[in-house]
Length: 178
Image 1: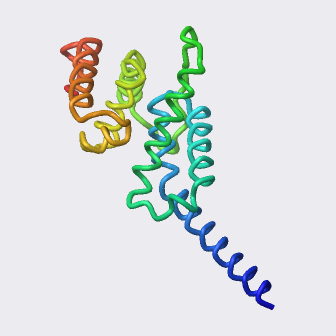
Image 2: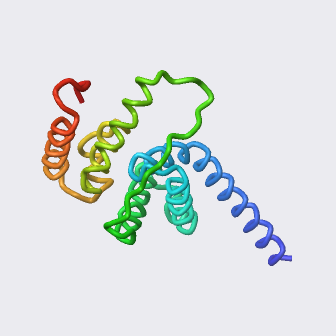
């Protein structure tokens, strides 16, 4: 009888844990996928990176589910997955991705701007890309980016300034101010 009650309590706890994880995935997955896309410029690879991130988080969900900031934890895991993936990919491989189909029409200028920015971003080293994406696209504070990437605040500030200078050089003076 006690074993049956213990089993029922365990099933209820498991169901509650799975519901918490499902709720987290529903809110965090789109943002993680967008961040992954900005890092790799390939929607299919971004989906794979996001799924790997979520799988790693699910494997540790019992331990991390009460973490104060699960979104920040997820970004950290994603960046580690992106860095691991970029180490595995050969240096000579160049990822070219077409823009996804969108339900609304964009003007040609908007698409051209988007493609130009992504190409310029792709010229940066992977850590600089991560800093620019997290800092300026995800609108994270310098401290949050430093925590996510496991580096000091001064490293984020220095690499961010260097990356923005490089982007401005690549894009030219007539381009929209970054």
